[in-house]
Image (cartoon, rainbow, N blue to C red; front, side, top):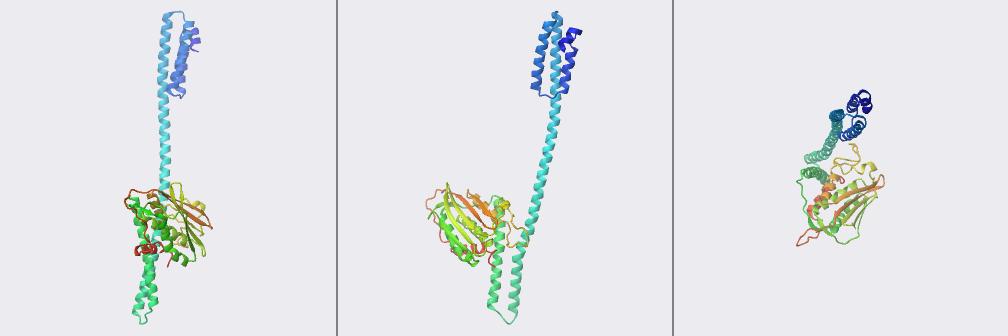
Length: 371
């Protein structure tokens, strides 16, 4: 068009109009427009050389064409920059809006979790306190009356002790989970016989478990395995999982505790034939304050902290915990601990768990069961 205009009118107005129209109407990146304009200018100059005889006119027309290309490039760049700015601003606004909606949804979920937690925790605190208060009232009435029934008094004292353990367990869990959040909870790793530790725990609670009509079977592929672990934390982990297995077990059911090796891990399996966990809850049960049954009329009590604490303790050992379950048929929790030792002159082997301190821990961990 530019060559035709030059040939017919002697001017390049058509070329100028085309270039400016292109620069104004099309949104193309500056690099691409520079290439298009450069190719256009080359062909335009080549056409001028073939059609213009006077050198003065040829040079002036070439200069005008070059100026036109430069101006068109500037307009194209400004146009593209303006478009990009608007586009990016709109994109940022959209991203900010989406981010705000996500944060708002998380805040609403957090608020619901917080509300559910306080409703649940108030129920968990009030129930044992009410039992303790009622037992104290009954003891007081018995003491005032002339007829003292020692068996009845002992029963009330047992109720007070059992519910004191429940409160202690709840408070301990709350304190420890808060310490873990604040990174102030420390575990003390020593070289310990993990097999004997788990076996001692299983033996120590076997009588308690059988009292509920559930059989406990302990099995192991290895007789001795010394790894770096915190024995107190391991006891707490195993007791918590066993207590859950009893709490959600069925009468005449079974619990199987198994230890085996898997690559570079020592695996502890705790399997039960209880009520099981719905498939959609298996990934959530380790979240804090999460329970399968959140109603206050649920069959089993619980604060929803135990499994979250178990996972944290396992992860502090460098391990992991997973669950396999089929609703109505039972669950299997598998703990994987790294098969590692720490440098130590004297290795310490697990002592018997049946001392006063650990019996108290068993009573605390099983306090939701034996009322």
